[in-house]
Length: 114
Image 1 (cartoon, one colour):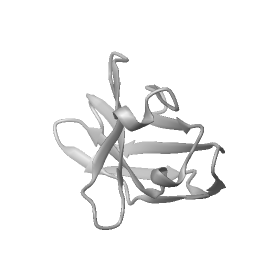
Image 2 (image 1 turned 120 degrees about the vertical axis):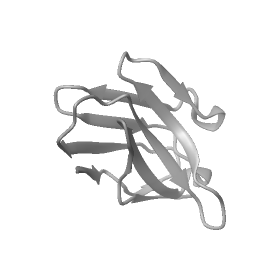
Image 3 (image 1 turned 90 degrees about the vertical axis):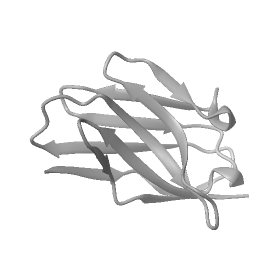
Image 4 (image 1 turned 120 degrees about the horizontal axis):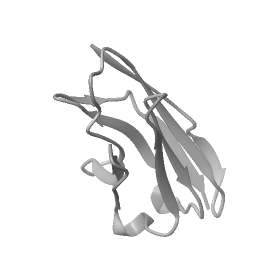
């Protein structure tokens, strides 16, 4: 079984920054990709950013140039540096890890006040 522990969410003013972390633990042979999704009230969960095991990344258009995803393979941890936050970034952010199965974190709230 794989467990994901997220941290770093919170309340920030518009224009500010936050850094999310997600650490995976358990029996993991290989992590194919790690990523972050977010869900706003009344909307579907959407991809924010994703990074593969060889370092390839992709981002939602709405966060390109503001967010940066990175991972530490030795620590099985993925990070999301979020800069220039605005009210539209307010959401619950979920960590996602794909091995032969897909795992989700419990979610961490990010609230941006305008």
